[in-house]
Image (tube, rainbow, N blue to C red):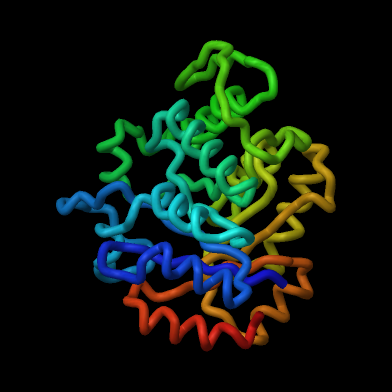
Length: 281
């Protein structure tokens, strides 16, 4: 089983270059970074985990800039977002960022897609909360048009693009309905989420990894009904606090990669946790 990590990198934590070098040297599979552009101070949206919102949410580094640094100092380390709030981006700009990072890292990028929880943050980007999932789906389709091998136009409910010359292209070739880098959709189990996964992604990124015994058969059924290859479905539990028993359970379910959580801390603390996680490699 491949063990990757995620961390809220901020202006107060270990630096991306230092962390990336340590991860590759120690044999970890990848580095996934979250995204928040800003956190409005006046907010009625509760923190999903309960209690006060942790300090790191308002100090998060831009994941694409940080991953670009990580790509430049590594050769094998996977690089991913966990997750990109696609609805909060201009899709033409985002398609270029993603393709560039994937190209420069020789295909090591994984696009984790999500729909967010912070109503106020999304509203500042002009996102209507009730339609954010449909907006995200539409923007993914527009980006696939830009990543297509031949100039391809797209006309959607929320945006459009003319048939265009758009390079670089993501390294991975189209597979089934998916065009672009490896794409995983994050979020809680449910029919709408599973439909999105089967439509335009390579798999699911369930946060915490709870309830997979019950939800995986449902996702596999939706996947099969969409005509997707059963062997191609990827499920990557995300932000997991690992234990030997938990990882063994994931392995029994056929899971091949797990993303474990690092603390949003300085170098000494983070490296100490990596030492502890080394037993799972």
